[in-house]
Amino acid sequence: MSVSSPLAVAARDFAARHIGPSPAEVDEMLATIGADSLEALMAQTMPASIRYHDPLGVAEALSEVDAIARLRRIAERNQCFHSLIGQGYYGTILPPVIQRNILENPAWYTAYTPYQPEISQGRLEALLNFQTMVCELTALDVANASLLDEATAAAEAMAVAERSARKLPKAFFVDRDCHPQTIAVLRTRAEPLGWQLIIGDPGTDLAPAAVFGALLQYPGSSGEVRDFREPIAKLKEAGAIAVMAADP
Image 1 (cartoon, rainbow, N blue to C red):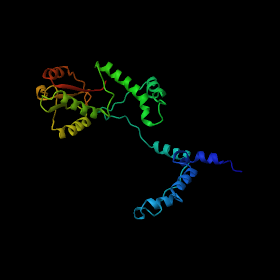
Image 2 (cartoon, rainbow, N blue to C red):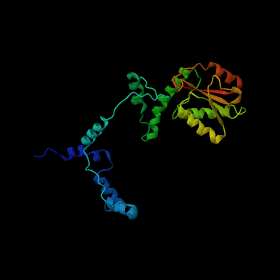
Image 3 (tube, rainbow, N blue to C red):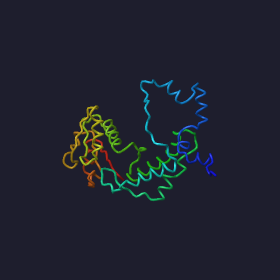
């Protein structure tokens, strides 16, 4: 006697649970557009000259349990090492209370409207909390709601600095201890705008009157922590903008 019911078979079928419509729904859609089968639909819409007609050589489909087991066997072959990449990618401690009440808080996901953009209703509140925290950590009056990454933020800060100090020379100083990916993005942004990028040591190479702004890294890509109060004061005295790439 078989113990497999149609419901049990369907539950084991990975494709039925995760991929597309049911066979009945497929038949209904085909009937609506006037096609007898999926093969007929493909023949009507895709020129035969670009179709692959040989067998694909694809293995038999796996059940969901078998697929997950295979993926786990593959994952177990991974070797996990401590990351020493540095350059802004640092391991951090995430307290469980923060993970549960901030990152996994279901209150961030609202039922305001059924389409994806409105998940922002909760994310906006989380970003407001983020901005408030950044203001408190940096003692700044305002903070933006974050950008794609540090390199993107540095490029935007350079553009803001240029607009804020238009009368100064079209040159921007960059701390040589900035992350290489940040310097690369700055070069990409500065070149088409005709801005000169000066890379050097803020303590010895920075000439505040010769630039419209400067980017300083804290801590540096090498891990060095430096006191930038003197170069920042000189930049302000010259009317240039001081930009800090910091990891608070």
